[in-house]
Image (cartoon, rainbow, N blue to C red):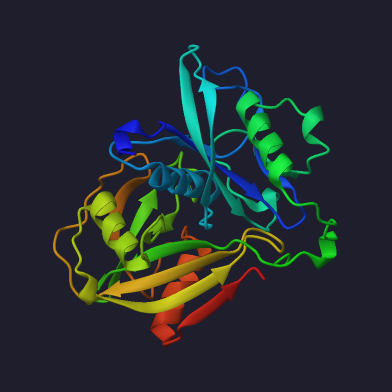
Length: 295
């Protein structure tokens, strides 16, 4: 089958070791497919993507997860305007806490067992997929929650941060007053890793955010911060890389996130600075490689 013949829609059915399904509550009162229903993560292919490439991208964007997937089935669907289409569904296994997943789209993620599905307002094709999986799934005794494999595993968000220093001063950006994170506060040039290595992510972010070009060979890891905002919160791993050299003068390229770039003496940082940014800079100056915060 060629890419052009592949269904435009893709989705991922994730099942945990207790036989529960990871479902996504879609927004209501919007002109989207199946508004207000419980469905599964997914979305349409873009450009020349294959279905597998699309479902892996969508799963990462919607949940932050990267899990092995196998083709499961193809189902028919209806678009918001009644247009008929089809969706290629992939099957994967994930043991984790749905409450800890990011949810950039829709309302929430939850795990449900098969017995609960009939009592939910379900997306029709998702119900069809689960029914098919139930018909094919081998009968097995439920695994008690406390005995679940990997039940203590926690998803850690990985962020990359750029440490640029010249003449004893460090580059910091002033976040936009309406920014979702650290509004009106100084921070490293930074970003979250997507489907890419940490160094590739940092090089991309430096170009996108500030017009700064850096070669991979000119980056070195100088500090790691492992933090939570509060006990039991989402763990985050911050990797701080120093650029030995770069080209370009930092400029504001994403004004909705950062309003200015400035060089600050490393021993006289601004009062309003992200706490872990300050901790990382102090750690680098002291020659330490690692800091923990919030645990």
